Length: 153
Image (tube, rainbow, N blue to C red):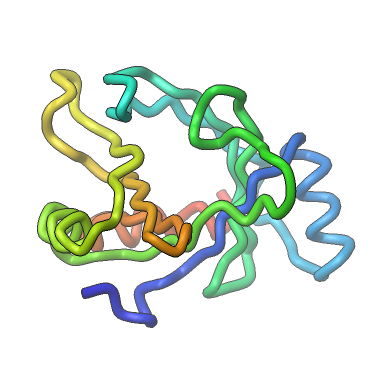
């Protein structure tokens, strides 16, 4: 079960990460502890296993933190029309069990980061609920490492 206290960020898709960071800072007085980061993640989606690249940044203020993700066409980070609020991110103690529980309840596993063989789920996982609310599930075991991006380098 996901506990409210485990929800630690709101992910927002932006067309340009640098402009997005400037806008959030201007509108809300948020600060960014470090420049936007980048990552290459091996993921499994309905289309198969592939490597996706992204740029992202977390506010220093939180929780809940604001995570900005630069839009990438043809991926789950594509910027669509309307709201670009993308997901609520939460830590879970047992990632596999939580995925199993949510999919048994009718949620859809959209994407999961996987090992080189494309088999074992490692971390970043997107689950879509019947209401259209996307959850990003992250293993609690990585909490300290993940939250390090909210601190200066």
